[in-house]
Image (cartoon, rainbow over the protein chains, first blue to last red):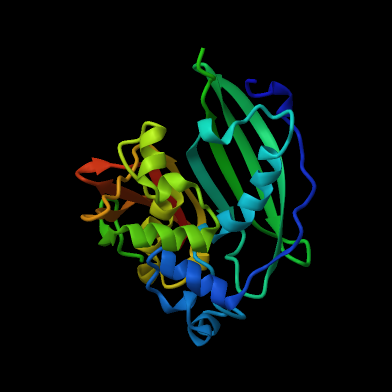
Length: 149
Length: 133
């Protein structure tokens, strides 16, 4: 099955709120070799005006991934994970994610473009906080290879 | 910040990745794709070896500039293309080199271009961070 072109415009239900924990932020910060104390020390984050430790910019992927799982689980998507390559990634921020946030992601498939035997699938996950305010939009381009003949 | 000009290097570092780094990132991010820790699976799908997660490379690249920025909340936009994989040898690991340069600037914003390479090959394309001045 090849990628279903009718995925374009499909909007998935908002993911359940993801509660950002302080230790999770510290764990992620260590994993991406973050050295700045705003990611690990609440006092350093508070000195910058944040309520708690600040998640590294790419932490948004953790929440975005919950929404991409919805797309991959779609029975008619035609997207086979083993033939999928992450080609591009982009984040547009209103503010950084901070420990204590409850983040919800709503995924929309924006384009499906033929590419060789496969397709390039672009999706946007809009992430909002508990108040419904925009935090970050994550755009992923997945390159889904064609099936071998 | 007011005295910056295009071409200035604002930050740089080299990060040494090992298989432990990949397992750590897998746990922290929730991305447990076995091509990032199992040689047999990487070989079976035709890869040159176990690869670093693209999102690990993207994540460590932008963190290079955060101490210089002071506040990561100044980052308005960050995008990359994953152009070449970072192969992480089980014994030797891999070095990822990041150089952050002023790419463009106007009254309100600054564009930082990240040159990210491993084994003398550029691994991220168009890695650009748009920052509030």
